[in-house]
Every structure is written in structure tokens, then in C-alpha cells.
Length: 110
Length: 123
Image (tube, rainbow over all chains, first blue to last red; front, top):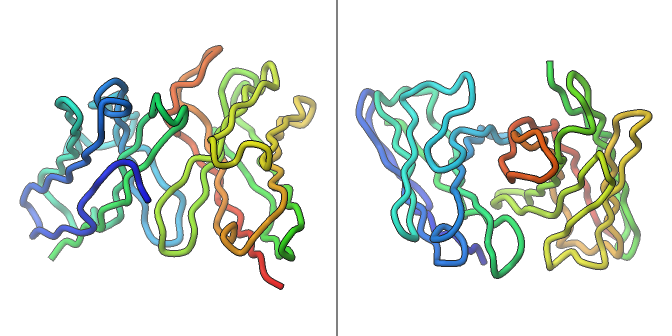
């Protein structure tokens, strides 16, 4: 059972903007930063967003993150076919004393 | 370039232990925490624990306490993940990942990942 809640799937057409939500609680998102990872089938995850809204070097600015209260969101603008992947949110949980992940959202680019 | 290379796939019997290695290169090994994350087939990601390569100090997720041991060998820039008392539920791909933050504490931002090691537990 995952601690952070994400929609299992979402879809959008190329060029459009899509947002993926991540819902938590006061012990995780509410008091710590949120990170986002992108994962293609059969490969290791890739850090997409850290510290709520920071992009590592090399990540396009089409990807953006935000956080409000106990929820966070990942937005992808100018959607491209190569953005089709699984996306995971993650963050530290003060009650569990560990990193918790969302269940992942499968993004389909129609 | 920063790289983490993991050891090969393992097949274990229930009740056995497995030790997976993660060799780092391209950066100052002692400067960045290394984390372990696993993923069962078709499932999500699960953080297992982290080690400070400088001090050797490790922290573990509650569900792995007493069963997981993280160690490091500074002479070879290698981190080891040792998981004991394996069950079929431990069948998964195990990843090591380097923290983004360089310092004496972990930021828990997993920047660079190993290629993953499949551990299969079956009788």
C-alpha cells in the first residue's frame, strides 16, 4: 500500500499540457520536499524534479513541479511522444522515517 | 562521467541471503550518499535504505530493519546491499542510486542510478 496517491494513468495528445497529481499527508508532502521521477519500461528511473520545483541539469523546462499543502503536481507542457512513460512522486516521511513513493502514473501520449 | 555499475542477476532459494554490489566511478565516492530502491515486476518503487560512504553509517526503512545491511569498501568505491531471509516477495529489480546533494547528510534526491539487478527468489 503506497503512502503517496497518484492517478494510475492519464493521457493527452501531443502539444498539449498534462498534470499529474500526488496526494500525501502532513508527515510527508506537508512538511518535506517532493521529487518526481520518470521511468521508461525496462530502464532505471530518472530524476525529473527535486526540491518541489527544481530541474536537474538536462531536464527540459517543459517539465515543472509545484506543491501546495499536502499535495504536489508535475506538469508537462508541449507534450511529445517520447514523454510516454511512468511518473513517480516521492518524498521523505517523518512518521515512517523513510522515503515514500507514489504508486506511479502511466502517461500515454495519444 | 558519473556511473554506478551493479553486479549481475541472482537466483536464490527462500531463506537465503543475497549480496548485490554497486561500483561507483566518475566522482568523489565519499562525498555522496548511496541509496537502494527496489521494484517488483509491474509494481512501483520502494526505498530500502541509504549509506554514507564517508562514515559507513547506514539507515534503513522500517520494514527492512534487521534484514538489510548496507556496507561500503572505499578502496574500490563499491557499496554492497545484503538482504537476508529472502522470500518470494523479495523478487524484484534492485537499484542503487546516488544522492544529488554532496555533503554530510542525504537530501534523498536520487540523481544517478545503477542499471538494476534482478533478484529472483524461488524454490
